[in-house]
Amino acid sequence: MVPIVTQGATVRLDTDTVDLDVETFGRLAEDGLRAARRDGPDAALPVLTRAEELYGGDLLEDDLDTPWLTDRRLALRSAYLEVARTIARLTVEDDPDLAIRMLLRILDRDSYDEPAHLNLCLALLRSGRHGEARRRFRVYEGRMHELELPVVPFHELTREVDDAARAAS
Image (cartoon, rainbow, N blue to C red; front, top):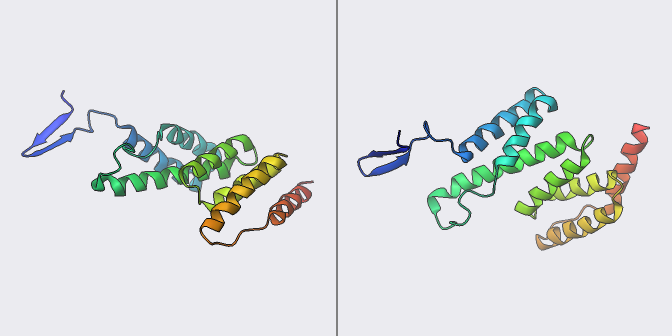
């Protein structure tokens, strides 16, 4: 069967006969985020991880001058960022390296994401990577200054990590 369907002057891909990674990503992202809210990490993480692996970048990112794709491109990027945030949140205690990778991927796509910057610094501090946390904090400071926004002081982050360590012991 030919995956191209024509109707008058319209030509479209028959998505019933062709798997599209963008559609699969969207479905997995939605299912994984729903599972994270309802069923917890054990059910959500495999689905979210598969969705994250499928996201290869913005939809047709080499063709950014296509206005009819802008809304879909932004919706998919937003879904990806939510998937990565959720993976980071669910894994920060048990697999901090995975959480750190997810936070870095968020910042690769949105270098002004303040919660991602702060959560990255916290995850690095909790992992004992203090120098790296300080370097990432400087990046965060620069981004917030560019936006003329206030910066959370570094000592507040270290205090939060110290308080969490005391509570755990």
